Length: 206
Length: 206
Image: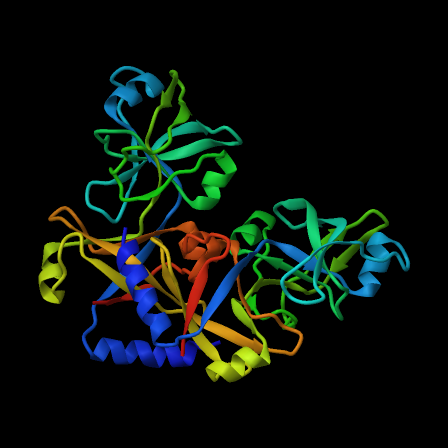
């Protein structure tokens, strides 16, 4: 409804040199530790890469895991490889309601005090005592991009997203690494709330 | 994570006199015309009020309707009364995906060109040829509140919501009526994306 005004504003922002970042929506998925992969897939059975993701070295896997919560389950949740130090299940708040768990909103890897869940694979089952989160929205930033735009690791910024359903996401955490390509990650609740379409850009308001 | 800073900012905004509005999250529901209620519930069968809603005269109903889309269904969708001029089904984008329909984001009652869907009630079934929307977020504003804060009917504002997952909703439409109590309505995708809790306030940025 406000698309013309938005387009004009976006153009102004571009001219003012505000950094733009491409958004990606992450569906529910899990990461596995080697120890848990041993029990779920079989000792030493490797993850099978299917498709590379935007973050260098990350890939979707052929294997699927059943995730069972107190109130519901997802019969075939996708795995993102490679293996991690700890297993981690990333859900949207909507997904969490379906499973009957109450995960906090956390950065990936920040798993202390999070709820657990049961995983079932072709070779066995594992009950995690922690590891379920709703991913805190974040921007993977390459150091070149950070230098150009004056962004710091762990900086909290707002990102304005442009659509008829446009929102400004506040409390977005910047994460810096040589291993990163510069993309902002949101979950599907956030994607639906902002009228996400593939290739959508946001303006980083710093 | 940024809750202390948010609380401080909210306090500043309050002191600056920015208007605050309470948010309510609307789950999927439908409204029925009398003609469709006749076919679904039986000729002349009235809607049975169960619980009044925040908007004066609006109420949830005892009757439930099965809603059937090309890819899925909701077996017992709730009705909000009283009857309307046209039947209308309000879904989140997540719900729409479940049913397999692609409704636009629209204000309530703005139904031209929207997709239809099949409704099944205890007395019969109706296939709507239009009427399915994702509700455009909006603020019901009482004229007293509008006068106090200089808001106009159909004005488009942004609303800052305060939480660790805080967002600013842009493109929020103000709707003015003597029949309204002042509340902002969002759907459950938006509620999840902003860490909604009952009683949550937003600051209207005008």
